Every structure is written in structure tokens, then in C-alpha cells.
Amino acid sequence: MDRLLGAADTALRTLFAHPRARRACPVVAGDETVLTPQERRVASGLMRVNHVGEICAQALYTAQAMATRDAGLREHFEKAAEEETDHLAWTQARLDQLGARPSLLNPLWYGGAFALGLLAGRLGDRVSLGFVVETERQVETHLETHLERLPQADHASRAIVAQMKTDEAAHAAQALAEGAIELPRVAKALMRRAAKVMTTTAYVI
Image 1: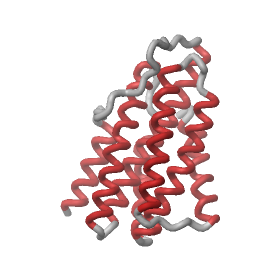
Image 2: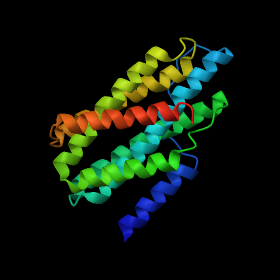
Image 3: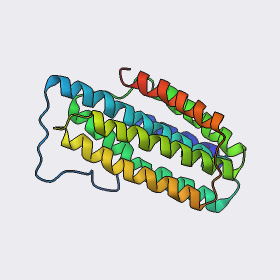
């Protein structure tokens, strides 16, 4: 019951509260961000996608922490979720600065990610960790693409995305160190397809 209440609290805070970062938002010293209307639209769409990714990260880690019976691994997932809160706060703040809204479908994204995290957790700890590794690898790829697509003048967004990419690589490495297994190709392909639907939709809705 305590875990259920904790999961519900996390969902409400993720979806409806204003997140607070423990670390300062990354910046590029001395560079001012000045964007044209078109560049602002592109940056808004990409940062909305990144914000959705962090909504999903909270759901995944919360579900995986709830599913495992290993106290040490539960602590690992909870700590990762705390670190991802920085990303959630940074992307939310950047959307506010751009005058853009988060995805209207955030409750749907959260629910779907929570279900996937719970399923991965029920398949065993090593599978759950393998899911983390593959998720973070795919996120890294998306973030690298965003660095290529973001306007060169958008120093603020680019600094955030670059730091997020570094952090996601660290999370994948930590999951590997904890004993993650390699997921089957079909599972990786399905994850990529689901991510494509999410990123394409969240860019505009």
C-alpha cells in the first residue's frame, strides 16, 4: 500500500506540480539566445518532446522501483528518478522561456510508460535493467538528433540537451554495472517504434 501511495504521489507531482531541480540549469557562459519566430517554433517542438521524455522517465523508474523486490535495486531506480527530475525541471523551465506549452497528452504518456516499466519489472530485475539500458541508448540517439536540429543560436536549449545526453549515458552505464541483460532485437524494435510515435506526436500536441 505504501508503494502504491508513493507511486500515486509521484504521478501527481510529475504531471501537475512545478518540478524543482537540485542542480543549476546548464548554460553557455557569455552566449545570449536570440531566436527568429521560426527558430522558436522548432526549439519549442523539440523541447516539448524532451519534456515528454522526462515525464516518461519518471513513470518508468517509479514503476520499476515498485516492481522489484530487491531493496538495493529499488534504491537505484529511485535515485535515477531523482536525477531525472533535474531534466524535467530544466525542460519545463525552457518551455516557459520559449512561451511554449507542454504536451497535452502528458497523462497518456505517463500512463503508458508506467505500464511498460511495470511489465519490465515483472519480467525480472536483469530484464528491467536491460530495459533501462536500451531506453537510455535510444534517448541518447534522440538527443544527438536534437542537437543537430536545434537552431545554432539556441544556446540555452542546446546546453540543456547536451547535459541530458551525458546524464543518460551515465544511467545506461550504471544499469549495465548492476547486471542488465541485452534485450532481444524484436523488443528493441518495438521500443523504437513506440518512441517514434511519441516523439512525432509530442512535437505538435
